[in-house]
Length: 139
Image 1 (cartoon, one colour):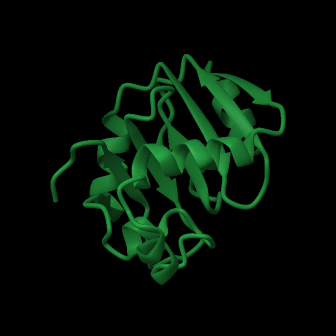
Image 2 (cartoon, rainbow, N blue to C red):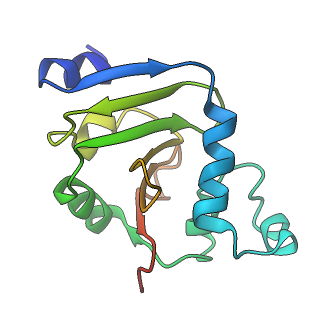
């Protein structure tokens, strides 16, 4: 059973949205990395992975177990999930029971609240992440 089926079994409404991955990645960049210069973005290979803002310490985030714990406690009535390298986007409603463990087999996946206040990122690297960041967060 995949993560979508697991969430649906827990009562989460999962709606696949049309090809909006590129649009959401651009919105994510504006919301969380707009203050980083193009030169700095180039130096951290931001064009390869948005989450490099965390692995290269450009944004103060929570990592690993702490990120998982905070994400699991976060109020998630509604959220969006998108991927780094494809256009899949999912809108989750009634998502209070969404946990990091539900997504652990996914790679380069981003979870955001609808207002882009926070983000949770599951990377493909076992030694990077997961990451949780909330706007205004201090390290």
